[in-house]
Amino acid sequence: MSEGLPCRTRSLPTIITGGKPLPADTLLSPAVHAGKRAGYKRRLEGLALRVSRHLSAYFPRFRAYGIDIGIDRSLKPWIIEVNSRPDRSIFNTLSDKRMYRKIMAYSRLPKAKAHQARRAGRRPS
Image (cartoon, rainbow, N blue to C red; front, side):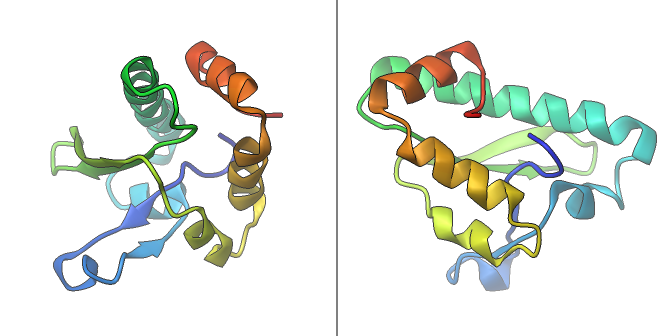
């Protein structure tokens, strides 16, 4: 995904209200050196795609999944939860609207095309 993986920060005080969306680079910059950040984002994206493909094999009627991933101090990703009806509108609060537009384009794909794109690991064009 260009310029940002869908990421939300969640700390204990904001868990009930939902959290604040931030670009992946903003979230990762304190912990991941700039030279390794692109590879780390690809790793997270690959994890999200594998989870999505696995779940869509069992629950094919869902078109998209919201995957909340936490990262521990050793940079190991942990799946916190997977939502079958993710709130797409939270990404509209980002100043860079590219991620929001991608998410909305994907949601408008016919169901069969969305499933094929997810299985192939592609994003909508």
